[in-house]
Image (cartoon, rainbow, N blue to C red; front, side, top):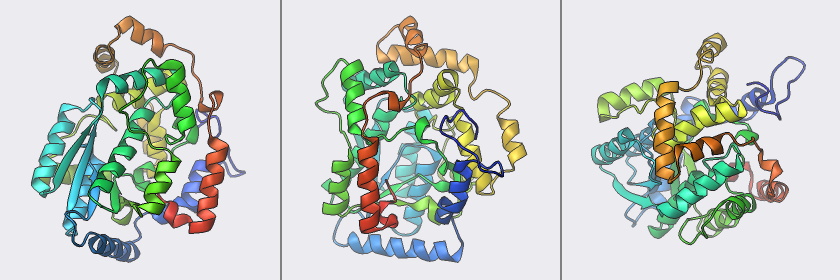
Length: 364
């Protein structure tokens, strides 16, 4: 990690706050042999008991990416009845579409697609691009959370399985991707830069989250934290056993997300998303620091491929390539430059932690 995170700080030994936090706190969420095995057995038993008499034990968010596909596989290996839910925002790569179909068929799981209203959604995406903040993919993040909880509630399912994990995603600066559930921030950007009133888009703020947690008693489970998880090994396994197809880069199961994380963040903010992933892997002992630094020598995107992506994205968003380039060249801004609820949400979540304990806040 480096000062492309403007809030980073270093101790006397030269270690940054991200790595010290990972090692001091987040590492406890990693796989720890027999202890994690027992925890996995316990949560599986809990899910099966809660699902008794119902059609499904859990809902798995399925993107077609390696993390979500392997999380679905782990669930099936432990005998869970899975409903796979894919939030379709219109940006799936061909490989992702094939992976979703193949995984659902080979694992014999239920499947539902939650399709967003395209006109509203593309207007939201353009609004966040015009706001010129790193959180250009916030509309997708909100829609994923909202759709998973909504479908789970419809089926009376208490457990949502996420492919998120600390082994490869334990480090991520807040200012690189501010809280997607801050609806004051979200609504301000849409009102200021958008052109449509949202009527169908599924929002997800802390009030809905509290409702699902406290009233509906729903839990988010990060299954990959409870198993040995090496991404390269997992990709090879999925390709061999489940005909899974690689889509060409981190989060490129979505063409838009891949572009945002590889090109947009790097060129506008100097943010190389690989730093966070590689730092997580260094702290987890999965890669050596020198090897990670070697990977950062090259740019995070391919210039020829990016030129084609720009044409595709501009056309899909309904604007000219020149208009899209103009938006990409707008001055960079950060979340604190817009109205937000950071202080209030921090107070609410900290209060929740004190009342209910840190473990119940695992998905926040």
